[in-house]
Amino acid sequence: MNDLRSASPEVKRFLAGALLNSLGGGLTLPVLVIYLNQVRGISLVGASLILSWMAVTGLVYAPIIGHLVDKFGPRRIMLFAILIEATATLLWIFVTDVKSAIMVGALASLGHSAIWPPQTTMMARMVNEKFRPKFFGLQFMMLNLGLGLGGIFSSVIVNVDDPASFTRLYVIDAFTFLIFFAFILSLRGVGGPIAKTQDEIENDGGYRQIVSDHKFMRLTLAKLFMIIFGYASLEAGLPALLTLFGDLSVKALGPIWAVNTGVIVLGQLFVINRLEGRSRIRLLSLVSLIWAASWLMIGFSISLPPTATFILTAIGIGVFAVGEMIWSSIGPTLTNQLAPENLRGRYNSVDGLVWVFASAAGPAISGFMLQFEFVAAWIGLIVLGQIFAAVLTMRLKKVLSPVQDGTSITSEK
Image (cartoon, rainbow, N blue to C red):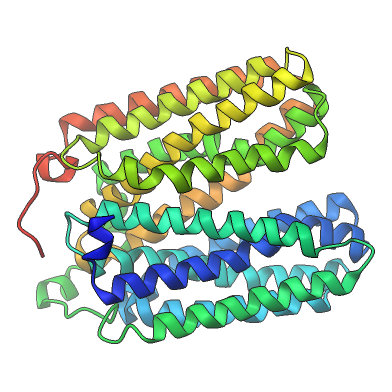
């Protein structure tokens, strides 16, 4: 907390804006499929395919966004993306069929794809290397706090028998994007284009240079396995697992997710203050093992009576949150430690591509295996995927320098 108090006014404004923006996101993210299905009459399959469509379009947008960030600076691209997100959020109100949902979904995907790479790049440039992991961790805490509070408010406001209640949610969410726009607009002198040397201009290999960075590509592969068999499987498969095979009601899901959010909000500061000087590679490997243990607990829980299933799953989700708190600080820090300044936007866009691809692959694997009731095999695949990610990560320990690994800090920038 002392680090936050001593942070620059720009950092504090950034975090405040991120909190307000995630509050709006928490209002609408949990109810989009419900809104499309139960209010607009789109089939459940159609509504789910809209989400997949948004993920696919994100694969197209992300590389372009990374190039634009490096060319024009993250702040300008981020402001543009926020306005797109605000517009798309408001346009969900006017969706009436699959065709209009596809159009709005494509616009929303553009805004979402265009926010994360410049945001991460801007954060990396706003602070020195020593504070960077804490800044990423604090932003993650604000994100979860906002999403959690937004989800609570959404459950109070929304009513499937009253379409106007959904309209209010989307209007409020669009308004929070405009507030976030004002916060980022106030950060003058931050996130502009950087001056490039003649050598950087002449030898800018773009994405070819990134692909040839074997350290980063090996890290990216490890992250891909971690997210597919971590976040993506959790978000896509856990509700089906617990309701179809664990005999829990849909209403039990809210309190379980609340445990995840609560652990992050209450524990993030404690965790990030204890990461400094520790090997980032070892910490990232530890995240994989924590997530594997979490999934083992969740998998075992469905063999128990419903009450015990609920309790053990809640504990498992809490354990998963511990891994998230470490990941949020270490994952983006390693990417930005490896990224040269003139390619930082594109490195972060590749990180974004990992999330987009995993968000498509995770639900596909989960849906297939749960559809055919391969529950034990699914849990086993997830655990093995995390163990494999831990092995891939630990093999990087030999090729990263102490500075890159976080065990030695360079002079402040």
